[in-house]
Length: 263
Image (cartoon, rainbow, N blue to C red; front, side):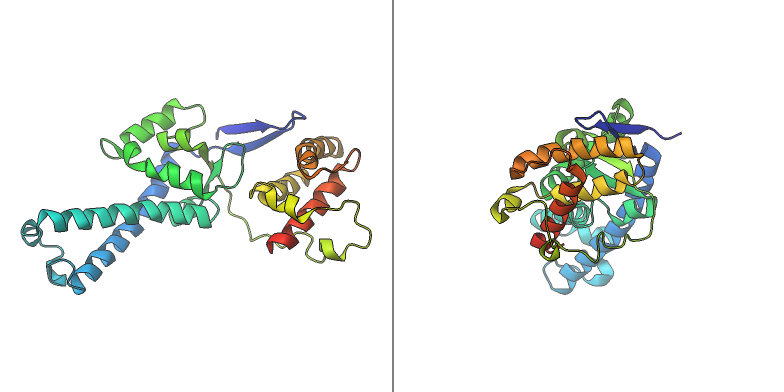
């Protein structure tokens, strides 16, 4: 039975996510490290071919040949491997909505606390601390932290404010409100200032996407409560009077942001 984490809106409407367990996270990491190993091998071969390190490509697997390299060369190779390791996870999780190839294969995803999309800062911080989670080997500290945490967080997740959730495989969604745009609305109920929209947090569009995804599965009463909880803070930020028009406001704000950001 999977565990869930629940986030409450101001109207006490819970958004639930299934937490990823240690076994699935380890399996995802195993797949990622297989790919990382191939990338590191390609990096070493490229350095050897370019003459950056004094190794023939046939000596890459020769321990004696490695033992004859200088300490500086060994440090350079290890530093390059660490950089590859860090930015593999950072860039992939950032650019692909919290998923590396391993996580995608296992149906996992990294999100920020509250269920928000992962940004570059949290992705960088959680993976910068990954070597600490790996100590003293085989992710002993990280797995211990996951088992002791109520939200199954390793040390990097606790510092970065992130968690790993199950992200069920599903067909790619079609564009929401595909035939509509804010610019083509005949009588928009709300007028949005471009500068105010640009000042909104960058995850606002993702938050609205998440709202529409969840709202479709709710009964009218809970949907209205959820709309009120989501629309209230956003209405204050854009200076809009939205009493009784929460769902219309969220739709027009979504269309306006999508047109502005080209999403």
